Amino acid sequence: MKRLGITFCGCIFALSVAGNSFAQDVKVGTLFDHSGALQDWGERHQNAAELAAEQLNRAGWTISLVHGDSQSSAEAAKKAALRLVEEDKVLAILGSSSSGVVVPVAESVTIPHGILMISPGATAPYISTLQDDQGKDLLFRTCPSDKLQGVVLGKLAAGLYSTASILYVDNPYGQGLARQFQHSFEKRGGLATMVPHGEEVASSYVSELRSAFSRKYGSKPMLAGKFDVLCAFSYPEHAKIYIKEGIEVFHGKNFLFSDGTKSEKLIQEVGADKLEGMMGTAPGGGSGSGFEKFKAFYTVKYADFPASPFIANAYDAAALVGLASYAVQAKGQELSSQSIRDQLREVANPPGIFVGPGEFETAFRLLDMGKAINYEGASGNVDFDSNGDVVTPIEVWKIENGKIVTFRIESQIPEE
Image (cartoon, rainbow, N blue to C red; front, side, top):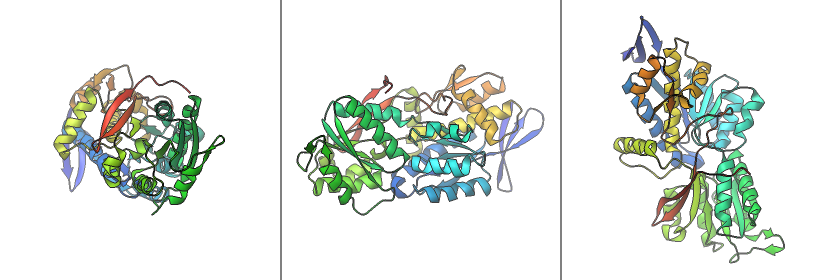
C-alpha cells in the first residue's frame, strides 16, 4: 500500500492507495503542562510528541497535533480538554503528566465522551482502578504506577535514614506516592510522617515545613538540627520554594526527591552546592538502545536533551497513537477513538515483530502485510496490561556538580 501526505485548502489528508479511499488525518490533542506547578515539563513533552508526529508523517501517516495547556490545574485542564473534544474533534488526547489533572479530566471529559487518553507521566496508583469504576478502557499511561516507585524510594531511604518527613502535594500523585513510600520505608524499620500542601503554588511553605520538621516519630520529637530527611514529593515549582526555605529557615541538610521534583532548574534555583549528593527516583527510561536512539533524534531536533522525567514516555504515547491508528486503517476499519484504543495492545504487546523508535516505515509495511508488530519504545517496554498500565524499571538518580545523573536502575521490584 502506498501512502501519500496531501494538503487541500490548509487541511491535511492521508491518501491510502489500495483502491481509491481517502482517510482524513488523525487529529490528536495534547494536554501538556505549560504553566503552573509543572511548567518545567510541558514544552519538553510537547517537543517529544511533535518529534514522533513528524517521524510518523515522514513515514507516510498523517498525525495532526492540536495543543492545549493543562495549566497543571484540574479546572483549567477540564476546560481545555472539552475544547479539544468538542471543538477540535480530536480522536485521542496525550497528557497530562499530573495525576491531579488526569483523574478529573478522565472522569468528567474523556471517559464520558468516549475519548482515548494516554498520559506519559501520571503515576498515581488510583489511575489503575479508575476506569474499572467507570467501566471503560479509555485511559492508558506509558509510565508505571507509583506503587513501583514508592517501593524503590522506601528501600533507598531505609538504607540511608531512620526517620523521614514527607512533604507532598495533596492530589492523587502526592497521596499515592507518599502512602506507598511510608509503607515501604516503615516495613524496613524507618519511621515516617506525612505533611500535605496545596496544589496551587504558594509564595511560602514555612507553615508546612514547621509541621514537617517538628513532627514526632514514636516518642521522639525531630526538631531542627535533629531531622533525618525531608522527602519532596511535589512538583518543581512547589519544591524550588520549600527546599530553599527548608535550608534557610530550618537548616535542613538532607532531601530525598521523586520524579515530580526531578528538575535541574530546581537545583539551579536552590543552589547546586546545597543539594550535592542528594538522591531521588523516577520511572526508568534513561537506558537501552531505544532510549539512546530517541535521545539522538531529540538532540538533533532540539539541540539538547534535558534531565526531565517522562520525555521519552511522551514520545511513546504519540508513537503508539500513530501506530494504532495506522493499524486500524490497514485492517480496513473506521477510525475512531475506540478503534484506535482496540489496536493499542496489538501494536505494543507481544507477540509481533520488533520495531523501535523512528522505525515507522517498517512498521507500516508490516501492518500492510497483515503482520503483527511489537513496539519497544524510547522509554522501554510499553506492554499494556488490562488496566492500561505498563511495568518499567525505576531509575535511582543523584545530584552531582549541579547535574542529574543516573546512579542505578532497579528492575526487580518486590510486591508490597
